[in-house]
Image (cartoon, rainbow, N blue to C red; front, side, top):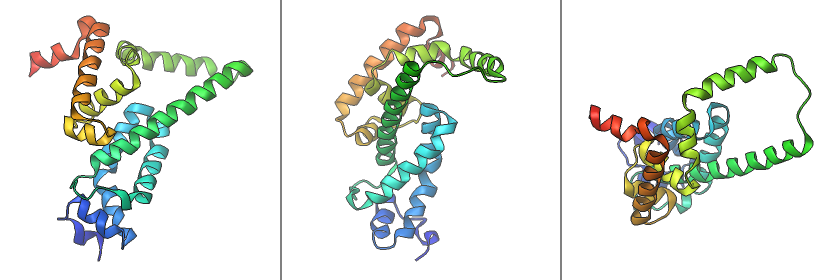
Amino acid sequence: MTPEDTDADDDASVIARSRREPSLFAVIFDRHSRHIHRYLVRRLGPVVADDVLADTFLIAFDKRAKFDLAHPDARPWLYGIATNLVARQRRVEVRELKLRMAVGPPADEIGHADRVADQVSAQALGKRLDRALATLRPRERDVLLLVAAEGLGYQEVAEALAIPVGTVKSRLNRARGRVRAELGDLDPVKETSRHG
């Protein structure tokens, strides 16, 4: 059987068959990698996103035997794996930052000032939004980004993060309140309601 033969099948059917024919799991990658990659770029930036995307699908492939075949769409499951890897990546970055701070600043490099100026310019645009997102607890940020940036519904977020729908709603409500308080006059909810 070829991946083309699986075009009409839901994800659960493809995953079930991939347990016997591992090459069929490529269909899941083809269907969902674009969405997961976009999510990872938003969370980690384009440099790290490719590696984490590969890890996401390697883990999914390894755990495909445990996938709940009652769920026809694998995307929430994949978002859950990706979100866990984002958290792991953040922990690694914090450890590396602490280590660099303990060691001290690196020697001056050629072009360092230009790189710093470019970074400052790029970050100035989203500075307030970044600050607003930084005020959120990681669990609230995960829910907010899965809903707002990825367009997942409450049930899909609940599946992705293995939490009840009620918890998704309460985390999202808290996250929205904190972001509104931080953004004030730049409240994206107000902008959306004016244009919607």
